[in-house]
Amino acid sequence: MTPPHVPAEVRTPRLLLRSPRPEDAPAFHAAIHASLPELQRWMVWAQQPLDLPGTVENLREAAQHFGTRENLRYLVWNADGTELVGSSGYHALDWRVPKGEIGYWIATAHAGRGYATEVARTLTDFGLDTLGFRRIEIRCDARNERSARIPHALGYRLDATLVNDAVAADDPTVLRDTLIFSVTR
Picture (cartoon, rainbow, N blue to C red):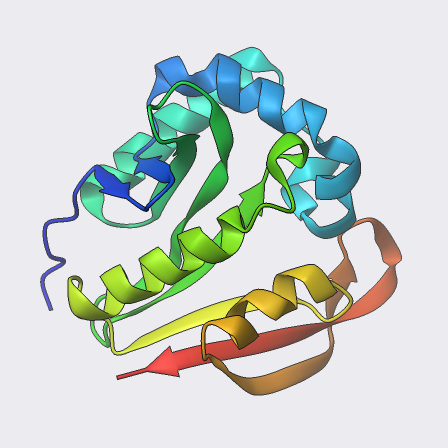
């Protein structure tokens, strides 16, 4: 299947999801660094956070991958696009099926307001209805109860628990289990 056109912006009732731009780096960098205590518990990439020039390059690459439909990262902003709330998008894309995996994180200052659920719901509906995905996954560390509640709330089913699947993001001496949730059409 040829990847479809994917809009650079998607709106939810309270949020703007926009493809990354290098000029977003200061806001993105600040949100990550302000949220490191929470992010480092679950995200491998947060163990060695990028400096500002590295963040600019990361967003430049993300924009390029968005353009080629290899990875569809969206930065999550408040409705008027003035404050970065987090990041989400479709990863592990396979356009032959077609399928993708939704990942998400919300900046600490915005946590607990239902934004991750709102974003995941929007990307689930958009992926199935507009992009034509036949399968969407959400994966998380089995210890991450907050993250695991989201696919449950959205009607995903738990397909598998991969035991000793990876090392814990915050302690490479500890093995972790991975939960794999999916919705299919």
